Image (cartoon, rainbow, N blue to C red; front, side, top):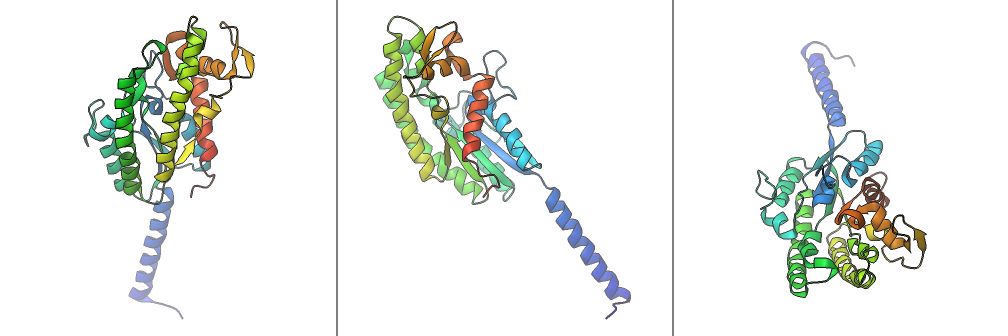
Amino acid sequence: MRLAGPIAATVTAVSAMSLTGTAAAAAAPEYYLALGDSLSVGVQPGPGRTDQGYTDRLHADLKARHPRLKLVKLGCPGETTTTMLDGGICRYAAGSQLNAAESFLKKHSGRVRYVTLNIGANDTNACLPGGGVDAGCALKGVGSLVANLPRITARVRLAGGGTPVYAAMNYYNPGLASWVSGGGGKAAALASIPVIDVFNTYEHAVYRAGGFRVADVNGAFSGHDLTTKVAAPPYGTVPLAVARICAWTYQCGDGDGHATPAGYQKIAGAFLKVLPAGGR
């Protein structure tokens, strides 16, 4: 049956609008939202924030799968779980990083494909003076972590809903760098391993309970391999775990625990292993 006159014109217009809407939806950007502390914004000693961090490298890999994927970094150097909730270090229009994340997730509902998170290290970093452990400080820091991390993961998931893939990470162990410091350095390095293990085990449990996949960054850094010995100039022959901390962070040379470019690449690789190729 042939349609004529106003009816035909109306059908043509509706069809055109439908095709335009489909094209617009196909062209709309998708997002990778990166949350966390200084590692999430690629901090390195000297330049500070960079575009060479793990989130940038991970975004490049993910964009190969999803060409319309845009990276949004809300991370804050020095952020703790408390300041992520309440603000106080970096400035956000919404008042805190978590508030800003919730606002972004709700505004772009259905178009956020990935969310990554790393947070908690700064809750206890100040508790390791000179390679030792300040027990009182550590207890306070762990208390903050226990109180805050489940709230953070729950609020992120609630705001983002079921569309994004959520992933978080455990931490590598900068304390292993004490191995090359001489004196009681080896003992301090060994003592740091159970401390980071307890920290990572707790975070892993919270992330998994909150629906986050967990990237094993400490595993990627061979954080428990004290048996394999490798050459690590200028430090001589050391365990693989120590060599990788010296090569992939600045801790051995500069006393700065941030990752080197190679270290950030390893972190990105650990995340990539737990992110499905096609999203959900």
